[in-house]
Image (cartoon, rainbow, N blue to C red; front, side):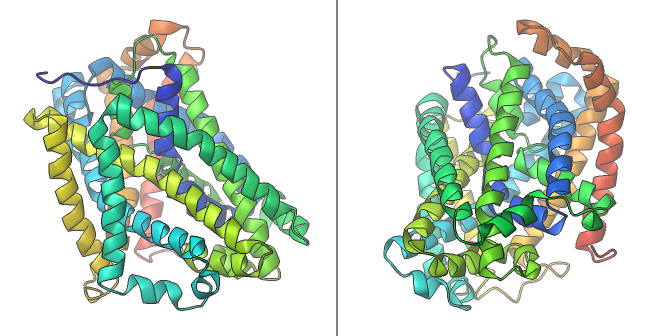
Length: 451
Ligand code: PHE
């Protein structure tokens, strides 16, 4: 390789950056409504089990691939087995698809943060605020550009000075803020019922779909199957203990998701008088329902501002990892330096993201297989490409390269305690289960099944 790759300076730096990637919009707006929709405690329990089994298997595989090869996904698969070169290509496609639209949503988050800071809480609580805003032409584009530039500045600073430093500051602050807001929310009058609703298992809502939905969420939430963990792994020093680091990242990600649910579910529950529909509506929860909740809450303006700030932090560290992955791919492929690569990627993100943003306004007539632009990109990347990449990664490691390669990388420092279990997972359990996830996700999105 011509250009020197950066590396994280410390173990904690690596863990915080990877956790920063994992903790994102998915934890804060998606996890809580899935938990509410799929039976509270039972969903939590299943999610937890899947995290320590499937999540662990895939994450340790990806990080080990990155660290072993010292390359981002495209190069890494080629080195492992030439025949799997195309998997690297698919994996890389995912961050190229996600980054632009993730930044569009990031722009909305900044807009809401500013709305709350400037005291326009009541406005944001109106039914039409969100759609009026997103359907404009210029305003969402401006916030989107600000968000992209914020991300790009950190990426251009590099692995250690940019990403690691940002993660070291942002992640602890994020944790403190989320704990603070959660405590405030669950001590509001009447919140107890909502906490029960969130924590107690409702077995009547449990079915196979609960498990598949939890699995889908898990992949997205841990930033798996899109080359991110491979890239971050390539910046990891050989003296870090892989198994331990993966555990720490998982704990961080799961705690934030759990707390986000604690913060959101009881508050919405109280506000809506126990109406479950408000909770399971999905994406509109964060931008439409929550502002109403804050508008009704004592000190809601402040809490709302802090809430959107923490969402912004969570989103930023994720989009940094997304952009960094695309940048590292371009660097590996063309041999450009970081600055040039970041500028080119930023221009790409600005163009594609602008189209996605306009997809809510002037371009809203564009529909692809029934989806608006953002939903279409989300569908292709999360429901189609990610499971495929994950399946192929397992097959590549399990049957062609051999799990031993990963195990040896893990054992560079310390014993791999659950080696046998890992083998079973990566060869059989994970791929079979993932095929089911893929079928489920596509069927659901195409309306072949309804859940
Ligand atoms: N893991 C992030 C989240 O939970 C989402 C993400 C997806 C981040 C893809 C990076 C890449 O929101």
